[in-house]
Length: 158
Image 1 (cartoon, rainbow, N blue to C red):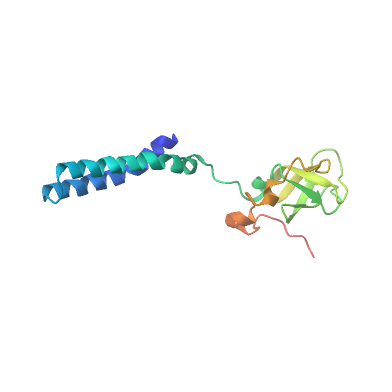
Image 2 (cartoon, helix red, strand yellow; image 1 turned 120 degrees about the vertical axis):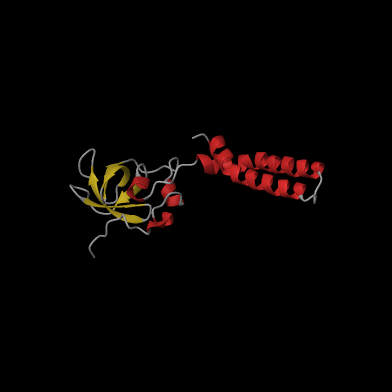
């Protein structure tokens, strides 16, 4: 559904309420016809002025959470990832499996390619030269911030 259509449907109850109130006030002669017309015009103008502010909320998709939010994120391997190992991505420790290029040494920069259940599939990448940034470490889309408190992350045995 288009954002404008969603917005119009959200406004219909308010329009009905304003029409009823204005009709009652006119019937009881508490306001004149000019005042009633002014109220209706101002109400509709308010809806037109506020639409640009509502539009982003009507078009945005729900944020990805958990492991899905980590696809494309960068981190580093905490242990050698030969078969299965551990990586740190967005400040959280995850079980990981190398999906490209064979084993990954400890301390190597990695990028999340995909995930399955509670395991990230990573590949080694060149160290970050400052051009690319990990948006999750900046705070947008972190599973913990989305209210999951790390429910989807695996816990390493201590």
